[in-house]
Image (tube, rainbow, N blue to C red; front, side):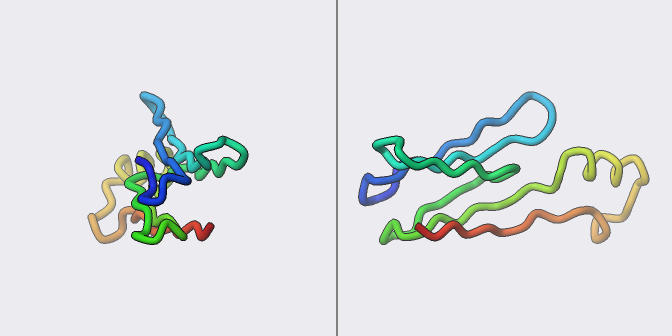
Length: 84
């Protein structure tokens, strides 16, 4: 995804198994932010921040499923905001 002002780009690197990363870079590639377990990112209309979701670690979710926890007790995703 590219920000509306064209200064930033974001993309996800997700392995087949395990936790992925959200990468936020300036177009000139001078600055890069790597956000562990980040996904579903959206730039603000003014391109002054990016909002994204943060997955719970894959092993935490796997262990909770093994324990057959109720849905309300399962690990939940979080919200992250990166201000430029």
